[in-house]
Length: 108
Image (cartoon, rainbow, N blue to C red; front, side, top):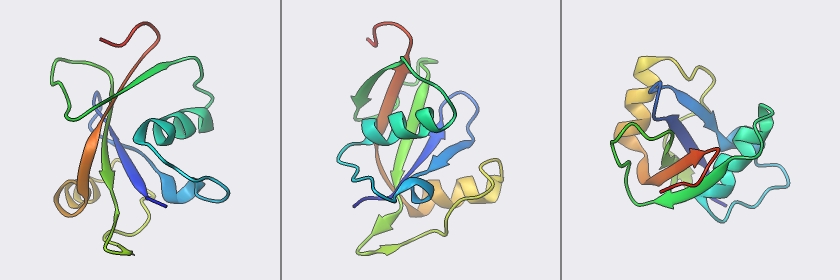
């Protein structure tokens, strides 16, 4: 199953690493990964939409990177999502897989 790292589009910080939540979960989409990470902090009731790229228009959401490439992890599990070196490593070494647009209303 894929391991995703989500970077918050507003703050630029790593919001979460699904490696912390893989037990018993089989992620089939980046939207499900975003929902699980939001639920882990008590965030419910949002609408989610998967996009190929960050629209760059100030929309809230997550840039999603795949950290398991070729059967192995390319970065260690992220513990400090505000560490700039870690963020740059994820952006450089992981595979960008899409953007999850989030909102409490209709995502368009």
